[in-house]
Amino acid sequence: MCIMHALCIVQIAMAVRSRDHPAAARKSSGGRPAEPREKPVVSSKPDVRPGRVVGVLALAGIVAAIMQTLVVPLIGDLPVMLDTSPSNASWVVTATLLSAAVATPVAGRLGDMYGKRRMLLVSVLPLVAGSVVCALASSVVPMIVGRGLQGLGMGVVPLGVSLLRDVLPPEKLGSSIALMSASMGVGGALGLPFSAAVAENASWRVLFWVAAALSLLVALLAWLFVPAGRVGTGSVRFDVLGAIGLGSGLICLLLAVSKGSDWGWTSGTTLGLFAAAVVVLLAWGRWELRSSEPLVDLRVTARPQVLMTNAASVLVGFAMYAQSLVVPQLLQLPEATGYGLGQSMMAMGLWMAPAGLMMMALAPLGAKLSAARGPKVTLSVGALVISLGYGSSLLLMGSTWGLLVVTLICNTGVGLAYGAMPALIMGAVPQSATASANSFNTLMRSIGSSAAAAVIGVVLAQMTTDFGGHFLPSENGFRAAMLMGCGVGLAAAVVAAFIPVREAEAGSQAPETDPETDIEPRPASEATA
Image 1: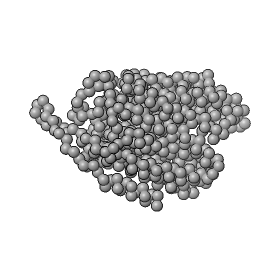
Image 2: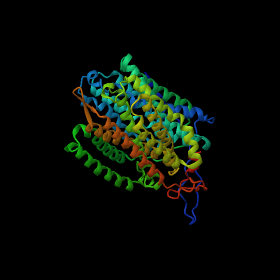
Image 3: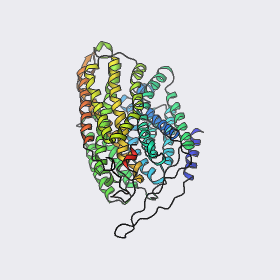
C-alpha cells in the first residue's frame, strides 16, 4: 500500500502542469529573431515559503545520504546474513554506486525537460521500492537488486539544488544552496550511528523499513510544500542513445575502479574494462556533440568555468572520501595495535557524527563568503581547509578527541566547497540546463570518491602489519593515506584558484543573455546572494 500511495502521488504530480507563458522574442542586431527566452518560473503555490521549501529539500538530501551509509555497519555480517561469500556480498555496496552514477545525469536531464519537482517525486519511488526489497531479502540477489534501486533515487540531491534556483528569491538562494549541499553530510552523520545502533540492538531489516518510511515522508512533503518551479524546456526527445552510452561507459569505469583490487589491477578483466570505458566514453562524447538534444551538453560543460569547477569537484570528492575510509578504521582497530583506539561500531558512529553536523552549521558562513567574495573563493578556501585537516592528523591521530578535531576541520572544508560548487555551475549555465549541469557535477564528485576508495584501498593493502596472524593496515599506511588526502586537497585549491569567473560574478553588471545560447541566465551574483 505504501508503494501504491507513492505511485499515486507521482501520477497526480505528473498530471498537474503549470501553464506555459509565452516568452517575448527578441531581435538581434541583424534583425534575425533570436532564440526564445526561457519560460518564466511558475510555482504551483503562490505563497512560497523559503524556509519550508529548503527544509523539505534538505530532508530529501539527508535521506539520500542515509541510503548510502545504511549498510556500512552490516558489511562484515552480510556474508552470514545472506549466506554468500564476502566477494558476492561486496556487490551490495557496488550496486548502489553503479546505479547512482547512471541515474543521476538521466534524472537531471529529465528534470530540465519535464520539471524538477516532478522528477524529484519520481526519483523517490526507487528509494521506497529498493528499501522494501532489501527489507524482505533473504539472499544476496534480492539485496543487490534492492540496493541498485536505491541508487536510482540519488538524483534527488542535484534536482533539489536546481529546484531552489527556480522557486526561491535571489537573496535566499546562496544560503539555501549551501544548506542543501550540506544535507549530504548530515545524512551521513546521522545514518552511521543510527544504522550501528539498530544493527546492534534490533533486526537489520528495521533499517530498510525505516528508510522506506522516510522516503515516503519526503515524497509527501515535497508534494505538499515544494512548488513545481519553472516549466520544462519543451523538448520532446530524450537522448536514449546518449543515456545508454554514458551509462555503459560509467559502469565499465567504476567497475574497474571499485573491483580492481579484488580482481587484480593488471588482470584482463580490469584492463579490459578500463579500455572499454575509454572507447565507449569517447564514442559517447562524439555522439553528444552531434546530437541536437544531448543528454549532457558538452559545449556547455566545456566552458572554462564549468570545466574547471568539475575538475575541482573530482579532487574535492577524493579528498572528502579519503578521511571517511581512514578515520573509522583507526577508531575501531584494537588498542593492542598501538595506534587503534578500540571503539565499538556505535561509538565510532557517534565520534564521526559531529563532523557531519559541522557541514550544516557552516553553511550560512559559506554563503556569506560567497556573497562577499564569490563562490570561487569559497571553493578555494574550502579545499585549503580540507588540506589543513589532513595535515593536522599527523599530530592528532593518537586519540579519539584528536581524530574528532581532524574530521571537524576536514568537514568544515567540505561544507564550504560543496556549497560553492553548485553556485559556480549555476552561474555559468542557462536556467534550462541547471538540473543537468548539477547532476553532472554530482557525478564528478562520485567519480572522485570512487577513485579515493580504490587508491586509499591499495595504499592500506600494501602497507600492512602482522597482528596476531592477521594483516592489518599499518600506522604508516594510515599516515600515508592522510598525507595523500592533504595533497589532493591542495591540488583542488590550486584548480579552484584558476577557475575563470564571468564579470557578473566579479561584481560587474551581468549580461542580459548567455552569449553562447542567447538564453537569459540568472546572474552569478544572484546564485551566491
